[in-house]
Image (cartoon, rainbow, N blue to C red):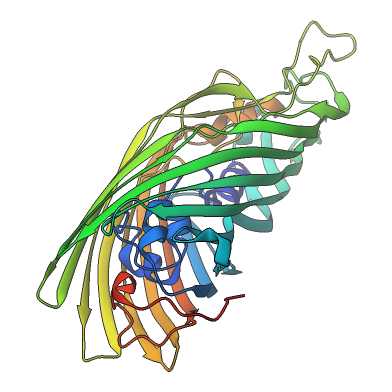
Length: 470
């Protein structure tokens, strides 16, 4: 049971990548370049990466980062016992970015654009059942047979909606900003049932259930500046800390251990549910610096982005739980904390003729998971490394993208052995080796309202069309 419980917990929540900033990109070329083009995005994805570059993008656009097919696989060494690794895989189809230009005559040289992006989005429902035989299973003396049924459901969705404004200060310098409204819904439910017996007729029944659910709305602001002249482009963007507007949530905790003939020192039963509670969430400030340089037809991109730490906060305010006839006091709160991280990206763009370009990039995606005194709601503690490649080609006024992104990482963790102790059971191993792999297939399109000779052509050198965009 121990291996199955640990393995399921790990595989179900690791796929979320809840402590990472750069697992996904926003825009078709952004995926292929690993988000490395803070200096000169050169398309409508500037609304996210650098609003200042939007001022130098003359041709109005509508971009849809179409179907993002994401395959994730996680392997837990000895997850089901010695020599029996536990592997889990999952396939998702994810929306990423919808963005477009807004053209109004009164704007003059300024630009407006809208954007809706999926900052995080995943839903999992996993279940495992198993039976183990042995000696003193789960740390209970005399327990030689143990069956388990474990289920974990997790659902997280976070959407950013923004309206960008940008203006050209000079022919080569643009400044801009994007206010975003971020809405987040987070659910986490864990249920386990364990039944065991001993040779002398002893019986054991243990159940544990914990759940968290909250909704939260906050606002944040992205500021950007882009300087583009000749073969060079340099950009700087700043994201402000978020400001909470509203949040409500609920938390549940259930625990029961019944035994006959076993000396388990079983904890007292608990049945507690609290709802309509204040909920909190916060994101940090970040700063990004990007540069690109063209060498003939080849363009190199590089960027660095640093994220500040988020000090520990309680997601949902709960009252302490005091089981009947017990001196135990249970803290049902979930904590959230992020440490500061610095991520980098490198990319190259190479034309093959006038209508197709190929890309190759790599970027880091370090975990921001930070330790907390209370139960941590985040689990993705492994650093990830990404490599992406693909093509961007022109058909009429539309540009299409086909590409792939691979990500991998590993880490030892002891987070989940602590969970078993809430049932009075011990884990067979204190730490486990986690190996994560993810493959993403991108199929996307962007639609320009002015003909362009090549998918990477400088928008700033094109005539602004008279026709309004959607």
